[in-house]
Every structure is written in C-alpha cells, then in structure tokens.
Amino acid sequence: MCKGMVLERMAGLPYPCQLCPKAYNAPGKLQRHVDSAHNKLKKFPCGQCCKTFATSTGRGQHVQATHGAVRISCEAEGCGKTFSHESSMRAHYKKVHLEERPFKCPTCGLTYQTNNHLTVHVDNVHLHKKPFRCTTGDCDKTFGEKSALTKHIKGVHLKVKPHACPHPDCGAAFLHAGELGVHERSHTGEKPFRCPYFDCSYTAATQGTVNAHVKTSPFHIKDRFASDLVDQIMLKFLCPEDGCTKRFATQVEVDRHFVKLHPKY
Image (cartoon, rainbow, N blue to C red):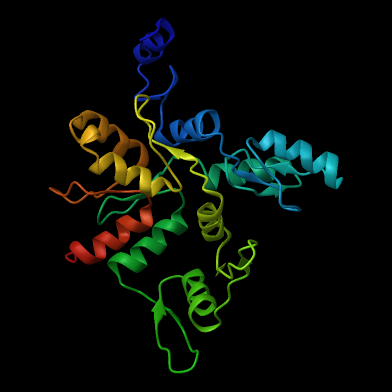
C-alpha cells in the first residue's frame, strides 16, 4: 500500500476506495468518486439536449455556451436539476441529497431527511393509510402516495411509455428514461459498472449485476470482510428490527421489507 493510501486510511475515514488511495466519510461520497473517477460515468444530463457530462461544472459550461441560459446546476451527480438562483440550488441540495436524516420514526427507528418523508413512512408502514385510490375502470387499487398512483395509471392503464429505443427494428419503449438507458446497453454492449475490488476485472451493465457478482463469485465469498464492505457501500439502509441483518439500497425497500416480514409494527 502506498504512503498516500496509508495516510488516508490512518485519517480515520471509514470508506476507502478499492481502486486508489482515496477514502471518504460516507458511502455515497465513495460511490460518487468511483463513478466519476474510475467508471467514467456521465451522470449529468443537459436538460435541453441529449448531451451528458461527467461533472455538474461541465454541464453548466455547456448550457451557458450552447443554449445561452445562465442556470445554476445541482452539485449532486446524476441529479440534472438547474436553478435560477444559487440559494435555490443550495436549499434543494440540502433537502434532497445530503445524507443527514434528523427525523426519526418513534415506532421503528428509521430516519428521514424531512418531516414530510417521515409522515409518509408512518402513514404507509405503521398506520397502513392508502388515501389515493385509482378510479380507472374497475380498478380499485389504493396507494400511500399520489406519485405512486400517477405512476400506476400511466404504466398500467394508459400504457404510457414515452422513452422509445432509438435503435432500428427494436421497438422497445419505457416509462422512465433510466429504464431506457439500461436497455440501450443491450445494444451497445456497454458495461460501465465494475467490480469494486482492484484485483478483479469484472464489469456489468448494471450495478445490481455487479452486486450479485460480488455476493456469488467464489473469488469474493472467501473474503467476507470485502463483501461486508461492499454491503456498507451499496446497501446503506439497515433494517432496525432486532436480530434482522437485512440491508437495502433505498429506504423504500426497507419499508416494503417491514410491511412483509415485520407486521407487528
């Protein structure tokens, strides 16, 4: 291990990069570093054309030079939102992207970034409230959030799939742009996600496939510490139930897990 790496690790930062000497104090920061520095992902799309960029700064320069609009880009990788004022961007960044979660559920201990998100969690998971009902035809499904109802109507009833694959003779279309992006890799063969271990050359089209590789490959299963580290980086949301060791990529997955396996809440 080089001297710089030793110094980084000795600094007490708990999330070291497996590909270079860098280390970070939060798993999200480590993932952003791996994506931009090692995977060379372009997560910053221009809101006015199809170009994408590796950094928010590059995107901002492009927008100003090409589209003639002075907008403040969100500093979070992959966000894509722009604002007319610096203060608006900062307020958005703190609310949406910072990992601080000061609002704690008194029932199960899960934490959230805003009081509104906590209220939604309590209503959905603990009180089982589903006030948003689909009235399309004979459908009577109910949902805890209006956004979930809207997604249901568009995807199930209206069959809205605005994101069509541009490749000739394909015909595939998707509800979300992210789904199209994953699908397009089946045509291009692009595999931007790589195994986080420096001595492994495995790459894949999705992060989920890489996670599965780490958990199933005999090469990695032998090193349990390494697998635990990947879990800490990729699956940072823990189930707070005593004795349950499940980890998840999102808070929504934790909530679904609760409803299914811990109904006593």
